[in-house]
Length: 311
Length: 214
Image 1 (cartoon, rainbow over the protein chains, first blue to last red):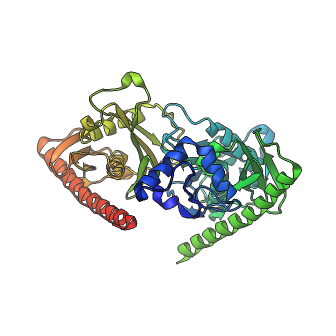
Image 2: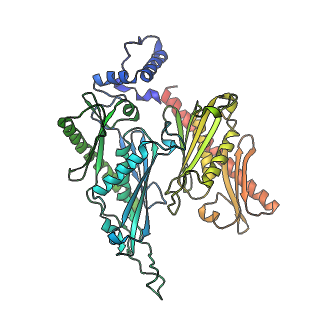
Image 3: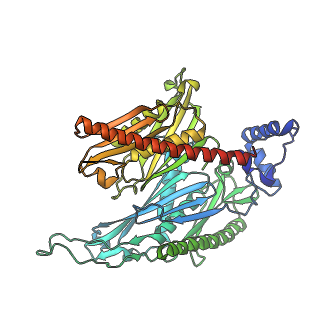
């Protein structure tokens, strides 16, 4: 509801004289917000606060829940404020191609169904969806989070392909960040439950191979990447922008770091603000802090899951 | 999960989990379809790739999705007072997160909740439930395994207080007297769901009221 998002950032605009009782004043603020979004936004920035009363460098409340989807081999639900992502992994067996006969593979897909935002029309998917899909795929591969050789079952004959599907259920800014966390969380939860693999042809007289991986095992993850998107507006850096802020700000910088604090990727697709090295360094520092935060949240939810299982 | 012009609802029936978002009433996007006497109701049904046991890459406009979208739309249209909102459009978007039988019914129930949450005027709460007949026993709310057993599957949607049936679908052969039993069972299931939905809506309204300080 609009009334809850007021907080400390509310100031009556100079144009509307705050008189006329609560309801009328609120209408003026809402009208001002819609008619002059940039001016409304900048008034808040001058007081070092944002539209939802957050300080500039503060991200939204984040929560991670694992194992939401029972029918998937690994799943996670991530919320950054209102932005909601569901990621699910399904493992299937495939025949690896000759060039990488000892490797499995990961297929990443990001969807923005019309449910996520009033601006997405059915029949025409959102413009950013394939962009984010590609970014996610690149980051997951290049960070080396998953060793593809771990996904091999029988060299040359069978290996796992992990289909990672991420659905955005509510798009309120920072889609890439939330999607990446949900992908990582789903992988931490992903359990490979020892399926029987039959290899046609060679084994006459035997109808199936013994189980190749007898125990349920989790995928080993190294170098888990975490990201942070900052919006740059004039001289301000805003961490974790909401959809409203994203419609006003034109320049974004996304930094992806791994567990060792190394930069996996930096993405700044144009925009009117030209960033000096100092600004980029600031973004990287903010990203480090955020990565630590996200790591803690993720570890908490993983241990919460284990407690649930054992009890 | 409420924002300004959208309402949403998450509905679970056993292992079937469905999320519905309702947008509107808002301006008609395709002016040629605009109706000067009533609101346009649009519905889109889609299943997540991971929702069923095997991951299936579903095309947006495949036959089953289109059929279910149509069914949901017509069922909800029977209840929405569309003549109160001429020249506008109400969008119902359904996303199935987990499918274990009875997805159609779960979608209709979730849509009812979301529409009520959006404050869209309706004649009555629409609820839906499935029933089947296996091993000479009528069964209520079939899951995927029971549904695939090859017995008949009757889906019923009713306007609960008015006691009117808006949706009735069945495929398979069934003698008339058994069909009546099964349909009656499904209607009872619908009524039970309607009571539950009513409680949830009351609870939700009480919470909104207390938040508003009323």
